[in-house]
Image 1 (cartoon, helix red, strand yellow):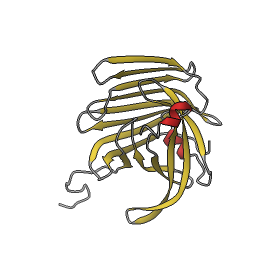
Image 2 (cartoon, one colour):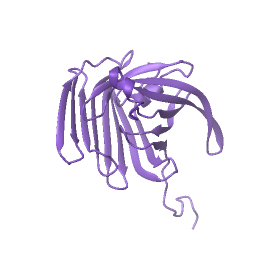
Image 3 (cartoon, one colour):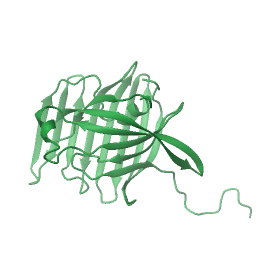
Image 4 (cartoon, one colour):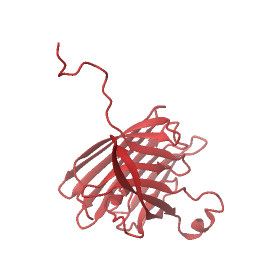
Length: 241
């Protein structure tokens, strides 16, 4: 861990790669000592909802305590709710299949200390840009939960601008590694998840800039970006009569 997490509130948009906005979001975070709660919610224009909360500690390393995800509405192929309790390893997934039948899967997994559900952006802000590769674990949010590995590799810096001022962000590629026999056949069956691309501003205060990738298994590629508030056009408070 290179940077302590603290109070955050950011505004986000979620769009297709051709620029059509499909959802607006809020990223909020509060810290009470070593305990941090991170909340990311997207409200879709079609009424869908994706609501994710991760609670973790920050001591020498980030350590997930609990995780909760709700995704529902027409934007998602299957409504789903996922709960993870890291202290017990219990993972509960409530999902609805193609026939509308609700299924509940309860698994007790041997969760490693680096499980990163809800923490990927936090971890990326703390990975050195010259680190050749970083691997962490994640519980895949599928009807039957399973552990996978995330392989994070920096791709170098890329330019962007803010108000005409030039900046550079490190481009990271996050690849999902499905272990075991399933991992061997996944590319052959077209089930290998696509890579996720994330851009992080470096320096003394690293910040998320943009990401491109699916939000759920089998989902479309969406772009997430920071956005500034837009005020209604009105006379300024400093205008003269």
